Length: 421
Ligand code: AMP
Ligand code: GLY
Image 1 (cartoon, rainbow, N blue to C red):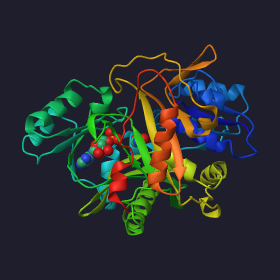
Image 2: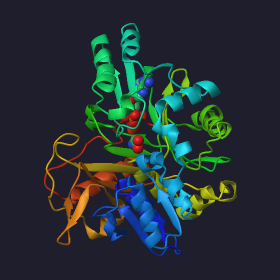
Image 3: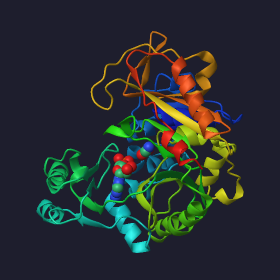
Image 4: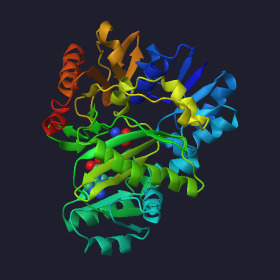
Protein backbone atom coordinates (compact mmCIF):
# COMPACT_ATOMS: atom_id res chain seq x y z
CA UNK A 1 0.00 0.00 0.00
CA UNK A 2 1.09 3.53 -0.69
CA UNK A 3 0.22 6.04 1.99
CA UNK A 4 0.05 9.81 2.22
CA UNK A 5 0.61 11.64 5.49
CA UNK A 6 -0.31 15.33 5.49
CA UNK A 7 1.77 17.46 7.88
CA UNK A 8 5.38 17.97 8.84
CA UNK A 9 5.98 17.96 12.59
CA UNK A 10 7.16 15.60 15.31
CA UNK A 11 3.65 14.18 15.52
CA UNK A 12 3.69 13.23 11.84
CA UNK A 13 7.16 11.69 12.24
CA UNK A 14 5.85 9.50 15.08
CA UNK A 15 2.83 8.49 12.99
CA UNK A 16 5.00 7.66 9.96
CA UNK A 17 7.41 5.53 12.00
CA UNK A 18 4.46 3.64 13.47
CA UNK A 19 2.77 3.15 10.08
CA UNK A 20 6.06 1.73 8.74
CA UNK A 21 5.73 -1.21 11.14
CA UNK A 22 3.00 -2.65 8.90
CA UNK A 23 4.67 -4.93 6.32
CA UNK A 24 2.03 -4.09 3.70
CA UNK A 25 3.18 -0.47 3.60
CA UNK A 26 5.33 0.33 0.59
CA UNK A 27 5.72 4.05 -0.04
CA UNK A 28 4.86 6.78 2.41
CA UNK A 29 4.59 10.28 1.01
CA UNK A 30 4.72 13.22 3.43
CA UNK A 31 3.38 16.63 2.44
CA UNK A 32 5.38 18.64 3.25
CA UNK A 33 7.27 16.47 5.80
CA UNK A 34 10.61 17.81 7.03
CA UNK A 35 14.33 17.02 6.90
CA UNK A 36 14.03 14.29 9.53
CA UNK A 37 10.87 12.76 8.12
CA UNK A 38 12.69 12.55 4.77
CA UNK A 39 14.62 9.59 6.19
CA UNK A 40 11.39 7.63 6.65
CA UNK A 41 9.15 8.97 3.88
CA UNK A 42 9.23 10.75 0.52
CA UNK A 43 8.66 14.44 1.16
CA UNK A 44 7.18 16.86 -1.37
CA UNK A 45 6.91 20.62 -0.87
CA UNK A 46 3.12 20.89 -0.76
CA UNK A 47 1.83 22.84 2.24
CA UNK A 48 -0.61 20.96 4.48
CA UNK A 49 -3.12 23.81 4.09
CA UNK A 50 -2.89 23.80 0.27
CA UNK A 51 -5.94 21.60 -0.29
CA UNK A 52 -5.82 22.05 -4.08
CA UNK A 53 -2.15 21.01 -3.96
CA UNK A 54 -3.03 17.87 -1.99
CA UNK A 55 -5.69 17.00 -4.57
CA UNK A 56 -3.22 17.51 -7.43
CA UNK A 57 -0.74 15.28 -5.64
CA UNK A 58 -3.15 12.34 -5.32
CA UNK A 59 -4.10 12.77 -8.98
CA UNK A 60 -0.45 12.35 -9.94
CA UNK A 61 0.60 9.64 -7.47
CA UNK A 62 -1.13 6.45 -6.54
CA UNK A 63 -2.24 6.85 -2.93
CA UNK A 64 -4.23 4.03 -1.32
CA UNK A 65 -4.86 5.72 2.00
CA UNK A 66 -4.27 9.17 3.48
CA UNK A 67 -3.77 10.32 7.05
CA UNK A 68 -4.49 14.01 7.67
CA UNK A 69 -3.30 15.19 11.08
CA UNK A 70 -2.91 19.00 11.42
CA UNK A 71 -5.93 21.03 12.52
CA UNK A 72 -6.05 23.60 9.72
CA UNK A 73 -6.30 21.27 6.69
CA UNK A 74 -8.96 19.24 8.54
CA UNK A 75 -10.99 22.38 9.25
CA UNK A 76 -10.47 23.49 5.64
CA UNK A 77 -11.94 20.23 4.34
CA UNK A 78 -8.82 18.33 3.20
CA UNK A 79 -10.47 14.99 4.01
CA UNK A 80 -13.61 15.92 2.06
CA UNK A 81 -11.45 16.89 -0.93
CA UNK A 82 -9.29 13.74 -0.84
CA UNK A 83 -12.32 11.48 -0.42
CA UNK A 84 -13.89 13.16 -3.45
CA UNK A 85 -10.79 11.94 -5.37
CA UNK A 86 -11.52 8.40 -4.17
CA UNK A 87 -8.79 8.32 -1.50
CA UNK A 88 -9.99 6.90 1.83
CA UNK A 89 -8.73 9.00 4.74
CA UNK A 90 -8.07 8.94 8.43
CA UNK A 91 -9.40 12.20 9.87
CA UNK A 92 -12.72 13.96 10.27
CA UNK A 93 -14.54 15.77 7.50
CA UNK A 94 -14.86 19.55 7.84
CA UNK A 95 -18.39 19.27 9.27
CA UNK A 96 -16.94 17.29 12.22
CA UNK A 97 -13.57 19.09 12.47
CA UNK A 98 -15.60 22.15 13.51
CA UNK A 99 -15.46 20.70 17.03
CA UNK A 100 -11.94 22.17 17.14
CA UNK A 101 -12.36 24.83 14.45
CA UNK A 102 -14.98 26.76 16.40
CA UNK A 103 -14.89 27.05 20.17
CA UNK A 104 -18.38 28.58 19.99
CA UNK A 105 -19.61 25.41 18.27
CA UNK A 106 -17.89 23.22 20.89
CA UNK A 107 -19.28 25.20 23.83
CA UNK A 108 -22.83 25.18 22.43
CA UNK A 109 -22.57 21.43 21.77
CA UNK A 110 -21.50 20.74 25.35
CA UNK A 111 -24.23 22.96 26.75
CA UNK A 112 -26.93 21.37 24.59
CA UNK A 113 -25.93 17.81 25.48
CA UNK A 114 -25.00 18.35 29.14
CA UNK A 115 -21.28 17.60 28.75
CA UNK A 116 -19.30 19.04 31.69
CA UNK A 117 -17.21 22.11 30.80
CA UNK A 118 -16.47 25.60 32.13
CA UNK A 119 -19.48 27.93 32.22
CA UNK A 120 -19.21 30.56 29.48
CA UNK A 121 -20.72 33.51 27.65
CA UNK A 122 -20.32 34.03 23.89
CA UNK A 123 -19.91 37.45 22.26
CA UNK A 124 -19.74 38.75 18.71
CA UNK A 125 -19.94 42.37 19.83
CA UNK A 126 -16.85 43.89 21.43
CA UNK A 127 -18.69 46.41 23.59
CA UNK A 128 -20.92 43.70 25.03
CA UNK A 129 -17.85 41.53 25.75
CA UNK A 130 -16.07 44.48 27.43
CA UNK A 131 -19.12 45.24 29.58
CA UNK A 132 -19.29 41.59 30.62
CA UNK A 133 -15.62 41.19 31.61
CA UNK A 134 -15.87 44.33 33.80
CA UNK A 135 -18.05 42.32 36.20
CA UNK A 136 -17.05 38.69 35.45
CA UNK A 137 -15.26 36.68 38.17
CA UNK A 138 -11.43 36.67 38.10
CA UNK A 139 -9.32 35.10 36.75
CA UNK A 140 -11.22 35.42 33.47
CA UNK A 141 -10.49 33.16 30.50
CA UNK A 142 -10.92 34.80 27.07
CA UNK A 143 -10.75 32.57 23.97
CA UNK A 144 -10.86 33.35 20.27
CA UNK A 145 -13.57 31.35 18.50
CA UNK A 146 -11.41 30.06 15.64
CA UNK A 147 -8.01 28.41 15.22
CA UNK A 148 -5.12 30.52 16.52
CA UNK A 149 -2.05 28.26 16.35
CA UNK A 150 -2.96 27.01 19.83
CA UNK A 151 -2.45 30.50 21.23
CA UNK A 152 -5.99 31.87 21.24
CA UNK A 153 -6.53 31.44 25.00
CA UNK A 154 -5.79 34.43 27.23
CA UNK A 155 -6.05 34.10 31.01
CA UNK A 156 -6.60 37.48 32.68
CA UNK A 157 -5.82 37.97 36.37
CA UNK A 158 -7.24 41.52 36.53
CA UNK A 159 -10.15 43.39 34.91
CA UNK A 160 -7.65 45.50 32.96
CA UNK A 161 -6.05 42.35 31.53
CA UNK A 162 -9.46 40.93 30.68
CA UNK A 163 -10.44 44.08 28.81
CA UNK A 164 -7.08 44.14 27.04
CA UNK A 165 -7.59 40.50 26.01
CA UNK A 166 -11.00 41.27 24.51
CA UNK A 167 -9.60 44.30 22.66
CA UNK A 168 -6.63 42.31 21.36
CA UNK A 169 -8.79 39.47 20.01
CA UNK A 170 -11.85 41.42 18.79
CA UNK A 171 -10.46 44.89 18.10
CA UNK A 172 -6.84 44.40 17.02
CA UNK A 173 -7.66 40.94 15.64
CA UNK A 174 -4.26 39.55 16.72
CA UNK A 175 -5.49 36.17 15.46
CA UNK A 176 -7.35 37.57 12.48
CA UNK A 177 -10.91 36.44 11.79
CA UNK A 178 -10.60 33.87 14.62
CA UNK A 179 -11.35 36.76 16.99
CA UNK A 180 -14.62 37.83 15.37
CA UNK A 181 -16.35 35.98 18.20
CA UNK A 182 -14.99 35.26 21.66
CA UNK A 183 -15.85 32.90 24.46
CA UNK A 184 -15.43 34.26 28.00
CA UNK A 185 -15.11 31.36 30.35
CA UNK A 186 -15.01 30.44 34.01
CA UNK A 187 -11.48 29.68 35.28
CA UNK A 188 -11.13 26.02 36.26
CA UNK A 189 -8.48 24.43 38.46
CA UNK A 190 -7.08 20.93 38.77
CA UNK A 191 -4.63 18.63 37.01
CA UNK A 192 -4.84 18.60 33.21
CA UNK A 193 -5.04 15.34 31.27
CA UNK A 194 -4.90 14.75 27.53
CA UNK A 195 -6.86 11.77 26.23
CA UNK A 196 -6.62 10.97 22.53
CA UNK A 197 -9.25 8.55 21.29
CA UNK A 198 -10.03 6.60 18.16
CA UNK A 199 -13.65 6.85 17.12
CA UNK A 200 -15.67 5.87 14.06
CA UNK A 201 -18.82 7.50 15.41
CA UNK A 202 -20.08 4.24 16.89
CA UNK A 203 -17.26 3.01 19.08
CA UNK A 204 -14.88 5.22 21.04
CA UNK A 205 -11.57 3.77 22.19
CA UNK A 206 -9.48 6.04 24.43
CA UNK A 207 -5.72 5.75 24.01
CA UNK A 208 -3.31 5.79 26.94
CA UNK A 209 -3.61 9.14 28.78
CA UNK A 210 -0.84 11.73 28.72
CA UNK A 211 0.35 15.00 30.25
CA UNK A 212 1.62 17.94 28.22
CA UNK A 213 4.03 20.63 29.47
CA UNK A 214 3.00 23.80 27.65
CA UNK A 215 5.08 26.53 29.26
CA UNK A 216 8.57 27.28 27.99
CA UNK A 217 10.36 27.22 31.35
CA UNK A 218 11.02 24.83 34.21
CA UNK A 219 8.36 24.80 36.92
CA UNK A 220 5.69 25.78 34.37
CA UNK A 221 7.00 29.33 34.02
CA UNK A 222 7.46 31.51 30.94
CA UNK A 223 5.47 31.73 27.74
CA UNK A 224 3.02 29.22 26.35
CA UNK A 225 4.48 27.01 23.63
CA UNK A 226 3.24 24.29 21.33
CA UNK A 227 4.35 21.82 24.04
CA UNK A 228 7.82 21.22 25.53
CA UNK A 229 7.37 17.59 26.49
CA UNK A 230 4.94 14.88 27.49
CA UNK A 231 4.62 11.79 29.61
CA UNK A 232 2.23 8.84 29.36
CA UNK A 233 0.32 7.54 31.17
CA UNK A 234 -0.88 10.50 33.23
CA UNK A 235 -0.90 9.42 36.91
CA UNK A 236 -3.94 11.59 37.72
CA UNK A 237 -6.04 9.63 35.23
CA UNK A 238 -7.04 6.71 37.46
CA UNK A 239 -9.36 3.89 36.33
CA UNK A 240 -12.21 5.58 38.25
CA UNK A 241 -11.62 8.89 36.44
CA UNK A 242 -11.40 7.05 33.12
CA UNK A 243 -14.75 5.37 33.76
CA UNK A 244 -16.37 8.70 34.66
CA UNK A 245 -14.93 10.39 31.55
CA UNK A 246 -16.25 7.63 29.31
CA UNK A 247 -19.73 7.97 30.83
CA UNK A 248 -19.99 11.77 31.12
CA UNK A 249 -17.73 13.04 28.31
CA UNK A 250 -16.45 10.60 25.67
CA UNK A 251 -19.62 8.71 24.74
CA UNK A 252 -21.88 11.77 25.10
CA UNK A 253 -19.59 13.77 22.77
CA UNK A 254 -19.55 11.12 20.05
CA UNK A 255 -23.33 10.72 20.32
CA UNK A 256 -23.85 14.50 20.29
CA UNK A 257 -21.88 14.78 17.05
CA UNK A 258 -24.00 12.03 15.51
CA UNK A 259 -27.19 13.75 16.65
CA UNK A 260 -25.98 16.95 14.98
CA UNK A 261 -25.40 15.09 11.72
CA UNK A 262 -21.64 15.59 12.09
CA UNK A 263 -20.35 12.07 12.77
CA UNK A 264 -16.72 12.27 13.87
CA UNK A 265 -14.34 9.68 12.42
CA UNK A 266 -10.66 9.94 13.33
CA UNK A 267 -8.75 10.91 16.44
CA UNK A 268 -10.82 12.95 18.86
CA UNK A 269 -8.63 14.58 21.48
CA UNK A 270 -10.15 15.45 24.86
CA UNK A 271 -8.28 18.16 26.77
CA UNK A 272 -9.58 17.64 30.29
CA UNK A 273 -9.25 19.29 33.64
CA UNK A 274 -9.89 17.14 36.72
CA UNK A 275 -11.67 19.79 38.81
CA UNK A 276 -12.92 19.35 42.40
CA UNK A 277 -16.38 19.02 40.79
CA UNK A 278 -15.28 16.23 38.44
CA UNK A 279 -13.63 16.02 35.01
CA UNK A 280 -14.49 18.85 32.62
CA UNK A 281 -13.63 19.54 28.99
CA UNK A 282 -11.12 22.38 28.49
CA UNK A 283 -10.93 21.86 24.74
CA UNK A 284 -11.57 19.40 21.98
CA UNK A 285 -9.07 18.84 19.21
CA UNK A 286 -10.06 17.08 16.00
CA UNK A 287 -6.67 15.34 15.66
CA UNK A 288 -3.70 13.74 17.37
CA UNK A 289 -1.92 16.07 19.81
CA UNK A 290 1.65 17.23 19.40
CA UNK A 291 3.73 16.22 21.39
CA UNK A 292 1.23 13.78 22.97
CA UNK A 293 1.42 11.48 19.96
CA UNK A 294 5.16 11.09 20.50
CA UNK A 295 4.50 9.29 23.82
CA UNK A 296 1.18 7.62 23.01
CA UNK A 297 2.10 5.80 19.78
CA UNK A 298 5.31 4.19 21.13
CA UNK A 299 3.04 2.50 23.71
CA UNK A 300 0.57 1.24 21.08
CA UNK A 301 1.10 -2.47 20.61
CA UNK A 302 -1.56 -2.93 17.92
CA UNK A 303 -0.92 -2.10 14.28
CA UNK A 304 -1.72 1.59 13.70
CA UNK A 305 -2.72 1.26 10.05
CA UNK A 306 -5.16 -1.56 10.87
CA UNK A 307 -6.81 0.56 13.56
CA UNK A 308 -6.94 3.65 11.34
CA UNK A 309 -8.54 1.80 8.46
CA UNK A 310 -11.11 0.28 10.82
CA UNK A 311 -12.00 3.82 11.92
CA UNK A 312 -12.42 4.92 8.31
CA UNK A 313 -14.55 1.91 7.47
CA UNK A 314 -16.76 2.15 10.58
CA UNK A 315 -15.65 -1.17 12.08
CA UNK A 316 -13.55 -0.03 15.01
CA UNK A 317 -15.45 -2.52 17.21
CA UNK A 318 -13.83 -5.37 15.22
CA UNK A 319 -10.19 -4.54 15.90
CA UNK A 320 -8.06 -4.78 18.99
CA UNK A 321 -6.45 -1.56 20.24
CA UNK A 322 -3.88 -2.58 22.81
CA UNK A 323 -1.48 -0.41 24.76
CA UNK A 324 1.59 -1.49 26.68
CA UNK A 325 1.52 -0.96 30.44
CA UNK A 326 4.93 0.68 30.27
CA UNK A 327 5.56 4.46 30.43
CA UNK A 328 6.92 6.94 27.91
CA UNK A 329 8.51 10.37 28.12
CA UNK A 330 9.21 12.88 25.34
CA UNK A 331 11.55 15.83 25.92
CA UNK A 332 11.33 18.50 23.23
CA UNK A 333 14.63 20.07 22.23
CA UNK A 334 13.99 23.57 20.92
CA UNK A 335 16.02 26.42 19.45
CA UNK A 336 17.09 28.85 22.19
CA UNK A 337 14.66 31.78 22.21
CA UNK A 338 11.59 29.75 21.21
CA UNK A 339 8.65 30.59 21.32
CA UNK A 340 9.99 34.03 20.40
CA UNK A 341 12.95 34.86 18.15
CA UNK A 342 15.56 32.18 17.50
CA UNK A 343 18.34 31.39 15.03
CA UNK A 344 18.25 28.46 12.61
CA UNK A 345 20.61 26.52 10.39
CA UNK A 346 22.72 24.69 13.01
CA UNK A 347 23.76 21.10 12.19
CA UNK A 348 22.07 18.42 14.32
CA UNK A 349 23.87 15.27 15.46
CA UNK A 350 21.67 12.31 16.35
CA UNK A 351 23.39 9.03 17.31
CA UNK A 352 22.48 6.40 14.71
CA UNK A 353 21.43 3.83 17.32
CA UNK A 354 18.88 6.33 18.73
CA UNK A 355 17.25 7.48 15.50
CA UNK A 356 14.19 5.30 16.16
CA UNK A 357 13.32 7.27 19.26
CA UNK A 358 13.87 10.75 17.84
CA UNK A 359 10.92 12.47 16.21
CA UNK A 360 12.01 15.42 14.13
CA UNK A 361 9.92 18.58 13.88
CA UNK A 362 11.76 21.77 12.90
CA UNK A 363 14.68 20.55 10.82
CA UNK A 364 15.71 20.71 7.18
CA UNK A 365 18.13 18.75 5.08
CA UNK A 366 21.03 20.87 3.83
CA UNK A 367 23.89 19.33 1.80
CA UNK A 368 23.01 15.90 3.18
CA UNK A 369 23.02 17.12 6.77
CA UNK A 370 20.15 17.77 9.13
CA UNK A 371 20.06 21.39 10.32
CA UNK A 372 17.71 23.24 12.67
CA UNK A 373 14.87 24.99 10.87
CA UNK A 374 12.22 25.70 13.50
CA UNK A 375 11.41 26.50 17.11
CA UNK A 376 10.69 22.99 18.30
CA UNK A 377 13.47 21.00 16.63
CA UNK A 378 12.85 17.43 17.78
CA UNK A 379 11.49 15.19 20.52
CA UNK A 380 13.68 12.65 22.32
CA UNK A 381 11.56 9.73 23.52
CA UNK A 382 12.16 6.81 25.85
CA UNK A 383 9.91 3.93 26.90
CA UNK A 384 10.55 2.04 30.15
CA UNK A 385 8.74 -0.14 32.69
CA UNK A 386 8.33 2.86 35.02
CA UNK A 387 7.74 6.57 34.49
CA UNK A 388 10.99 7.35 36.36
CA UNK A 389 12.84 5.07 33.95
CA UNK A 390 11.24 6.71 30.92
CA UNK A 391 12.14 10.20 32.15
CA UNK A 392 15.75 9.15 32.82
CA UNK A 393 15.92 7.47 29.42
CA UNK A 394 14.61 10.52 27.56
CA UNK A 395 17.10 12.84 29.28
CA UNK A 396 19.96 10.38 28.68
CA UNK A 397 19.03 10.54 24.98
CA UNK A 398 18.85 14.36 25.05
CA UNK A 399 22.44 14.45 26.33
CA UNK A 400 23.58 12.47 23.28
CA UNK A 401 21.88 14.77 20.75
CA UNK A 402 23.81 17.87 19.80
CA UNK A 403 23.06 21.12 18.07
CA UNK A 404 24.10 24.67 18.79
CA UNK A 405 21.65 26.85 20.74
CA UNK A 406 19.60 23.87 21.94
CA UNK A 407 17.26 24.46 24.85
CA UNK A 408 14.88 22.19 26.70
CA UNK A 409 13.06 21.90 29.99
CA UNK A 410 14.79 19.97 32.75
CA UNK A 411 11.63 18.94 34.56
CA UNK A 412 9.49 17.05 32.05
CA UNK A 413 7.68 14.37 34.07
CA UNK A 414 8.59 15.89 37.46
CA UNK A 415 5.00 16.76 38.33
CA UNK A 416 3.76 13.33 37.24
CA UNK A 417 6.45 11.66 39.35
CA UNK A 418 5.55 13.83 42.34
CA UNK A 419 1.91 12.77 41.96
CA UNK A 420 3.47 9.42 42.66
CA UNK A 421 0.77 6.96 41.80
P1 AMP B 1 -4.53 25.80 24.38
O1 AMP B 1 -5.96 26.05 23.97
O2 AMP B 1 -4.03 24.44 24.04
O3 AMP B 1 -3.59 26.93 24.04
O4 AMP B 1 -4.56 25.73 25.96
C1 AMP B 1 -4.66 26.76 26.74
C2 AMP B 1 -4.41 26.38 28.13
O5 AMP B 1 -5.13 27.33 28.89
C3 AMP B 1 -4.96 25.02 28.58
O6 AMP B 1 -4.06 23.99 28.44
C4 AMP B 1 -5.27 25.30 30.05
O7 AMP B 1 -4.09 25.15 30.82
C5 AMP B 1 -5.64 26.74 30.04
N1 AMP B 1 -7.09 26.92 30.07
C6 AMP B 1 -7.95 26.93 29.04
N2 AMP B 1 -9.22 27.11 29.46
C7 AMP B 1 -9.16 27.22 30.81
C8 AMP B 1 -10.14 27.41 31.84
N3 AMP B 1 -11.45 27.55 31.58
N4 AMP B 1 -9.71 27.46 33.11
C9 AMP B 1 -8.39 27.34 33.40
N5 AMP B 1 -7.43 27.16 32.49
C10 AMP B 1 -7.80 27.10 31.20
N1 GLY C 1 -0.37 19.47 22.69
C1 GLY C 1 -1.60 20.13 22.50
C2 GLY C 1 -2.14 20.09 21.14
O1 GLY C 1 -1.72 19.32 20.30
O2 GLY C 1 -3.03 20.87 20.86
